[in-house]
Length: 92
Image 1: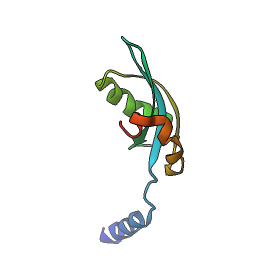
Image 2 (image 1 turned 180 degrees about the vertical axis):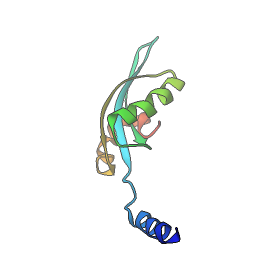
Image 3 (image 1 turned 60 degrees about the vertical axis):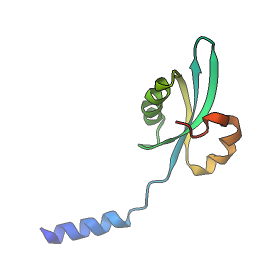
Image 4 (image 1 turned 30 degrees about the vertical axis):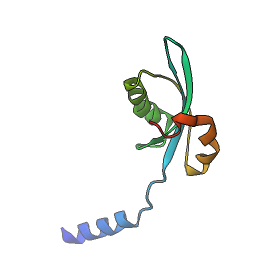
């Protein structure tokens, strides 16, 4: 049994760490209507579906409704979106 476990441990340790994943999104609040563009880090798979499942409840807790996930990207696209996201840069 330990002949199997040791190679598995070594193989797992050799795997590269998962790259950071981010998503940009649009959200809204009603009464009065407010629209927001934001950027958030995604913890699970780097997909729009995962971003939606993570962001929708987090935004709803603060009275926001997620409208759309615009896309997902790695840290290379992060800095270029910072100014546009303003107060919603990595807020959720």
